[in-house]
Image (cartoon, rainbow, N blue to C red; front, side):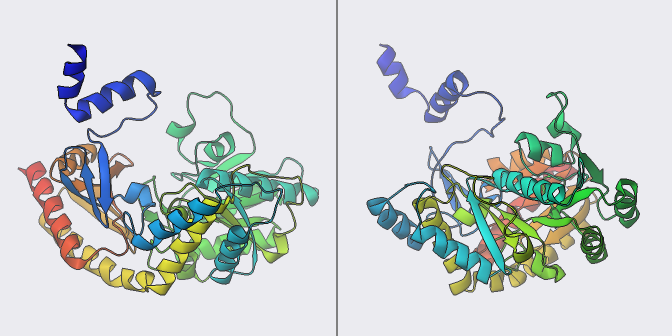
Length: 409
């Protein structure tokens, strides 16, 4: 009798019960379970269709189940998954070359995620600073930033809610107010040359989609050079074409000392990377840092294909037109509905700031077949695939407006 009950139970309910029983409850998932995807579309276990405006949080920039990526997965899986960094890897070396050629002269470290890339960047900055006789050097980051969930990346994150509940974390971190040049200058003056570096998202992501100003980034570059400190760009969300350039730093015309990548680099396969500019490429020598799975054959093969597709299909070049369409539509909504306070972002990395908590808007959009999320309490984050069509964008924004209309009645 019990077997019959299980077989007739709603599939989503079955998944939820099993998850509640066996998974640690550190997430608060939406009330849906996806089964498969195609391009910008997702389908749940009941075969309901959704338009994906979240992309796994800026991960599936090419949408779901791209045929060329699937082909690479099959071919590489037939040959080799993993050997370790005790040996050379053709796939890792090809990806490293492609990243350097398409960013700035330097060298690459591979790991498994963006937070691990940020951890590596922190170690790079600290090791370099200590080699220059800086005692207990300070690491700067920005308020409202998000850099990950490991202890060092949590300490770098400029949000108290991420750090609270764990007692005293690593010392030696200070937070500069976003786009506040006076706050940035004061931090360097206060620490009197004892700064290891500053890490910054060029568009604050989890903190509400806030682009940094050109003058603020210029000042950061100037002060780090004057103080022999490292300028690190966290491009985990903004990299791989999300902003309409392959990397967001191209908008600013500034080459960092290190840049961290993750998320969309592997199209859903776990991989992270740190690109280090030539002057600092020798700081982390043999034995100073490592990763068991970092740079394995399968992940780097998929990441290489992701990069190849972005470049060869001119997908990144098409992002500005899609972005202009979205911003035009969203600004019309802003003029029409007073609950929209601001529309901001770069490329297809867009935030809509409301005068009300935005979680309910995200929940209602999901019910209507549009996947997006709420961040920074009042902001809806819109991050569709970079290769989405105008008609689908229009369809999604019609759903978005329908939900907004409900909240204004």
